[in-house]
Length: 253
Image (spheres, helix red, strand yellow):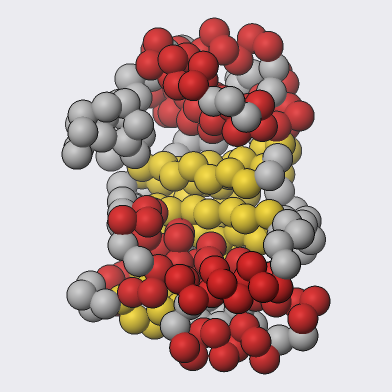
């Protein structure tokens, strides 16, 4: 398994590199709240689930640390805009207006992933292999997988079907997030390679050009999670994987 490098020294984010940072909610610190802006703090208060609240905060803090290092400013000064283009509320995809940095945040269970690029559309997704019954998996598969994908799912041994399903799911969701669509588009429109194959986008209904630009990667974690990364373009030649534990506990230098 590929190791995630632990560091609190944030490398420069170049056009040729995608940085992916992995964190656990146990690394959340009391002083992190001071790094958030007013709208982020307001969103923190809206979470009823403590785990979801911690994941949101960690995603914000990693974003601010990494972007602050690129902009040479303090983390709380990073001008992150989260305006939703549809309703104008502060829950849209985060961005830096007028700058080329792009990033994608995902969380599931106690894990958080944040992927960064300079200019390349990026999407990341992670799912915990929970105790969903095989009946639940079958019902979800009808909403997410094509007939051929469901065939591969149910050909797998029962004990492997959760991992197969969530591998499909994270690959599709990573592509949709890279496009900035999330689940605004049905996952049934996105056809990806089978989990035992190299991750690839095979077809995308009404978006055929996307097939030629999408590059996908598995993100190896512990056996309780499945994660995928998608990039729309071939500019990024290297994926750098970092463990954010030291960064979150000590801040960056």
